[in-house]
Length: 88
Image 1: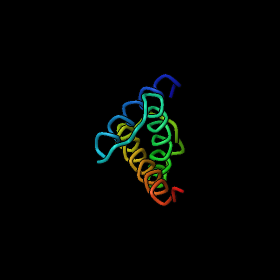
Image 2: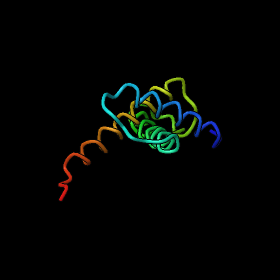
Image 3: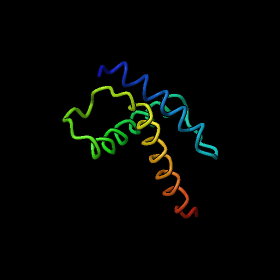
Image 4: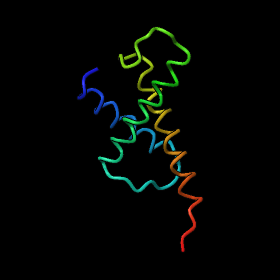
């Protein structure tokens, strides 16, 4: 997969994940793209646990769905760690 396709899929996955997850996420366009890109990697790793074809970074039909799922997981993890912080 080319880097441009990775960035575009990351942006789309980040936007969809932020729309699905309730609450206010104060992120700009760059942070949303990075969220989707990290979510794409997490989703790809989760997907590779179920399919053993040896091609982790290839485009798959379910790639966007797993990217969105991975971005939601990342948003939930970031939200959970952010709530535990004690503000002085």
